Length: 231
Image (cartoon, rainbow, N blue to C red; front, side, top):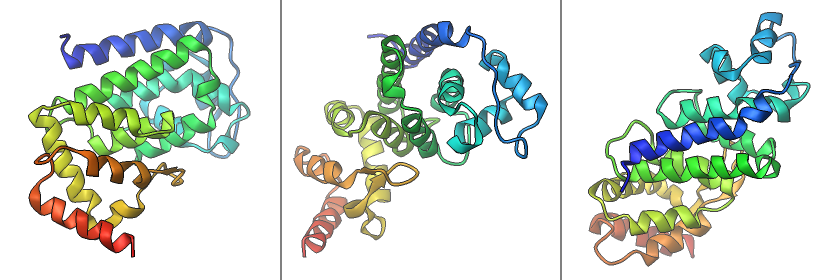
């Protein structure tokens, strides 16, 4: 089996290749002149790889109303934003905003090669995370980003359940520690704007895991949470 790190690198390189024809097209950026200078717009008109990293972070999180052509702007910058994010770089304070912005940019309507390349990155990123602990990226942030973009948690939870590595189990323990805090799991939502109901998929998934996969103390707390939420 190919090393998970190499699979992710290959997927990121394929992402660059898939977006190259669109990026090569002439583009004249425009937007809020209060927040962005002419120098910023000039940089954004060039190749995304040459855009200063701090400006990439601003594009990754800025609202769509700040750009004359948000969809094209975000689509052009997607390979750079995604590469920084999945390799552990900090593109901003909250990765969930990237997922919400990709949904706003209607990435599912982009050309098939671009969509498939982005989905391949999600798969490679998820499998890499499940094979290392601790890692450079948060398993919670990765699950939130990927699930938000794809509109469901089910495929990613299925992969997690089937990945019987020590790293995957330690991630599960860590995530339950966070999810069970103040019983947030019963009402958990994903996305910067809480667009995706995560609890409705996470709770049945956790209940379906084979015996012994969940720490006994966490399982008892989880069952108490479920009983309380059903009241």
